[in-house]
Amino acid sequence: MPSLRHRRTTALTGALTVALLAWLPAVSGTAAALSATEGAGPGHRDEPVLGRVLHDPATAALDLPFDGVTDSAAERRLTAVAQNRLTTRCMARYGVAYVRQDPAPVSGPEDRHRYLFGLADPVFAAAHGYDRTAGVPRPPRPEEPPLTDDGLTALYGHRPGEPPSASVPLSEEEARELDTGIKVDGLSVPVGGCRAEGYRTLYVPVRTSLDPTFPFQIAAEAHSRATGDSRMRRVYEHWSRCMAHAGYPGIETPYLVQEVLGLGDDPGGPEAVAAAVRDVACKRKVNLVGVGAAVETAYQERVAAEVAADLAAYRVQRAARLALAATLP
Image 1 (cartoon, rainbow, N blue to C red):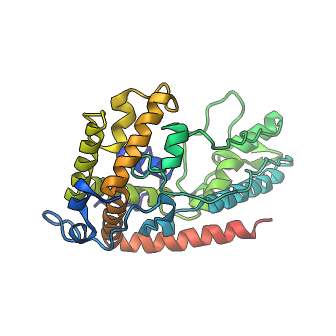
Image 2 (cartoon, rainbow, N blue to C red):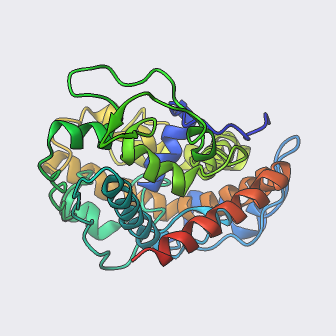
């Protein structure tokens, strides 16, 4: 696969979108065709041998290789709070008092892979269908403190009403070498303002910093390969037949249920709930999550070997970011 040592945060590809949605995503009859014994063997061509295939595991219990380089909800909050502190310190250099509300503390267990294979929780399916927002508290977005024009200039790096700078440094190291020519309180404002400086300080401090989306890129690459694996296609076929027998024909994969059935306008309505209950039941019947997790693990391990040097560098970079975030009061 191509090198992933690109530092600029780019638009997400289709495969990456699948992965972000995933970080967001009773064996009988046909399930016998996907037993742990068969699933563990090599697939077609150069498909990897699988490790242990769990029987109908809960998605919250899955532990995939790239979880170790993907921030948890608590770690994301830690770095969000740290970025607020860095921004506040930067604004103070320009004589501007700026205190932004921190995100709410994380509560409850985390399920990183809740939608990795589509909806998989029978209790949620019966209660909410495909409405992912149901039962999920959405704290209000922190309001920005009121700022003068000078304050806004320091925060965003350009005067109100004027376009932002066309020069976008890749790292904080490079940003410090640039003079925007924009001054507040007699001092030059950093490129992108204090908000950008706080972000760069945490996520891309030096020229050699890897793109902060690196974990999602490699997870997306592994997921893309996994979905094309013959064993994954086979379990999709069994799931699709199960759905057809239940009155939902023509759905090739669990990712297409809402689109094929036209449930987008009412993902939590009675029709969606009925489909979701059957969807999850069919997944459990063919052990889709168990097989899928084994296939996903095998491809994450393969991709990890291919980008071993970058992965090692990113682990160091991530550890430094979390350590810095933990030291900021």
